[in-house]
Image (cartoon, rainbow, N blue to C red):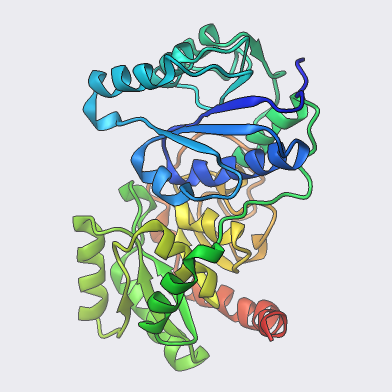
Length: 349
């Protein structure tokens, strides 16, 4: 397997999914720690690009406008035509990622092994990491570092807030009640969502029983806005930050005493920021996409049946989220209060 040489020009192909972008950050920070003279170019769609633009270890972002179809691909090919790299790392395994990898000019293009490279993605790479049994998505990306003989430890995301964002941080937090818990109430897939009336009960209990204000976070999709409306209609008084830019969301999550999140990107952002997060998991396997290394005692696992020792797998399970009760979540809130709350207070004092 190829090794990393000093001063390399490295291109990262991981274009979509904000949560996956968070998982890529420890790969990038490890490259920079191993060789500060390396130059990192990252190809991203606009959404995740807005999260990582300005990251101290990302030298350049090239935007792939996926919404423009073939025109977006052609524009990206033109942007890559005059760039040369020493190493391309293809972390995505669908056809468009393969095409983008083919646009890059580099002697080494490293991708997943043939078994995991869907859509014939292996055809677009020159070298492949060894095959591996299913594991957490974060660990899958760290396999690329192992193949290049670069240490991933200590694992660092450097997600922020960054020094240049202090004024924004003051403005954003100045409009929020303190202390607060962030409730991430929306996801891209309906099967990941939880019932508004249960969110409302949790929000009310946070204020009355734990002395912490509930703040709603997420996007401004029609479903999220309707969930927020129904939470308020059920009598829970909350503060909404739905639709704030991703860098402002970083500030909100970082300042949260607690995050309660569906299976979506802010869950992984919270882990990266070392903020205690209660994960509501049902559709996806939490062993594969749940919180990485931390806060496993705060997971509400509706994916598995009681007592089931399920393996790490890609399979989805439908209709599981209604199994999560308000009591399940408040039990985790109580555990947070007992285990993490005082620890966080002493750390910040």
